Length: 301
Image (cartoon, rainbow, N blue to C red):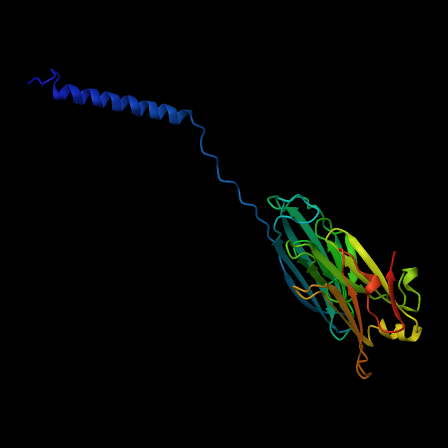
């Protein structure tokens, strides 16, 4: 039977089938010309071990050896690095303690790679420092715990390079000098030992050095002295005095650093307080407040 336009239904079906076959063939040919999908990137992986060992030496003393390894990462914007770069970090600590003996022996190794690099490759740095632990503050600086004996102290290093900024014998103080954006600043107090190698700090009138830095540079060091050499010796004593350093209160209109030094028991506390304003991203030594007989002035090593 002929349709109204003179073409049979069977003819129309056959034509449609031919068009479908041609389209399928074209699709297959086009697919064959496309490159194969990329294989998934092989995941980066690193594995490290933490260990604990208990042993006895020839004198019968118990020895504890602890090795810990941990990984971390930073965000972008580490000072001194490209703004879009993050770091993979590895902290390896080894501490040995002989029971019933004062102090410990310890080292900290700091390693860093650009995030995305194979951690089996050479790190951008890997110093080993005497100490017991390390942490990152503000994705900007390393703070390494150095106290192996009874006295606690810390070294502050640039996160980008591990270059030393300063040592501090009080916990690190950090604060932003801007309310609009985070502009971190770091403060501490160096207290020289009696046998210090630094000639300028051997003066018996020295009490300590107030430190003020950014994450990349030392901004100001200020030497605190006392007219009375015997009092200065007491104020810088690790056994006879306790020191605290506080930074600005959040939202304070006047930023300042507050240092207090108190005598330890059995002596009376006899606390002294020193306040140093922070202005124009510097220590405002001219307006510092100190007890009679104490002084503060800019210091250069």
